[in-house]
Image (cartoon, rainbow, N blue to C red; front, side, top):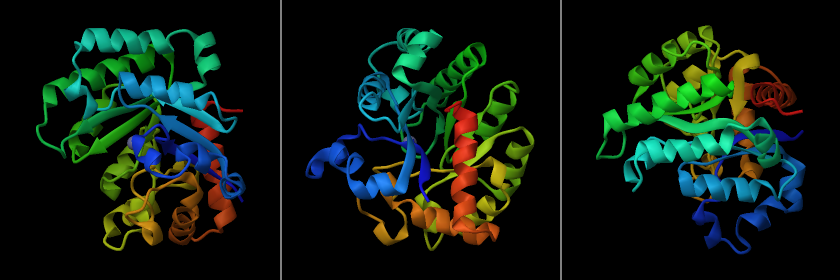
Length: 267
Ligand SMILES: [Zn+2]
């Protein structure tokens, strides 16, 4: 049974180190057997353009564009200029259909890598949530070491829906986010030996709010840890979710695909 990868970065230059690059992976028979859909997620003005361009080549791929909290700290242009360009990319529904843009992402807070400019991250996060509200688009949230601030921020935008990708907060916060209508997505880390906290959180997410992802080329699941990740390696993530929820692999596969299609409005 095929899986829906709700978060990938196939434009990442890490794939260029493989023979044939990302294209070789995306067109392999093993990939076609294992994967039904991919959401390709941009992170800054340059990767957003690469992301849209690449997505056009694959029937099974859709994309999200946005300004990542880490990337926003390394841009030459002002927030006004960057966000105006993003808005131009996504404001017209016809253009979104043409470019297969289904969400704003990834956006959020990242307090992991110094230096951290919280004020600038907050400005980008808030203004992209406002765009999502105005355009009625779902968002993909990146929250790294910033759980309290991320939760407080999304609470201020009750009309905005979306997913916390690669969820790493507590099971308590997961329950609160679920109450507010959020989806939670889990990738490779749920399979890691020392990831009891992530598994505890995954276990409280009902099947109708769960998504699967790779975040590839990063975060390969346990047997492939350290290697370049891709959507064809997701089955052990689904197996772990099946174990945590006490259901069959097929149930995880179909529920997570249904959820992603509903959230991103994909037929
Ligand atoms: Zn990502």
